[in-house]
Image (cartoon, rainbow, N blue to C red; front, side, top):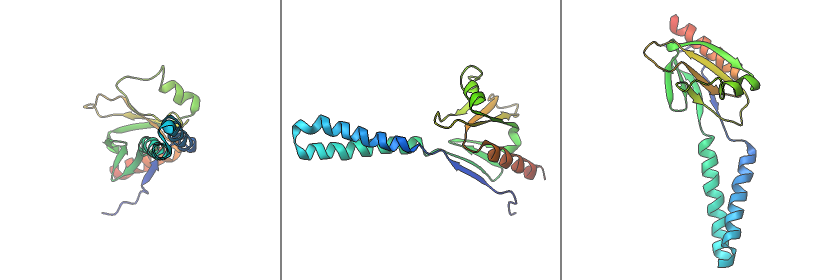
Length: 155
């Protein structure tokens, strides 16, 4: 059976400034190794930059997808039939829901460099998670994709 709802996919990549910081980490390591000679300094520059870039890339490689009747956010996978209402959060509301309004049982996919978010209620009585908090650059589009997937699952 062919899916008629368009799948949603978003990768929460790290901001560009993190790549500059990766280079600066390598440069710092190169300066530390400078007294040992040119070759260790160049090795420190290359290895320090590469290590910091790997960390930035790994942190920014998380994806949010709505495919095959499921919401996949990072390592969490939940069927859309177990999800309730999705609430689009602006920057101020998102900050509140990841600080003083947060529930310790909630699933939080946080990226501090992304101001917007989507809060999705979990309606499965077997699941102790009250809601999902998903940092996303396109919360309206993600909410629409979830609504379309839920409508398709009911059909």
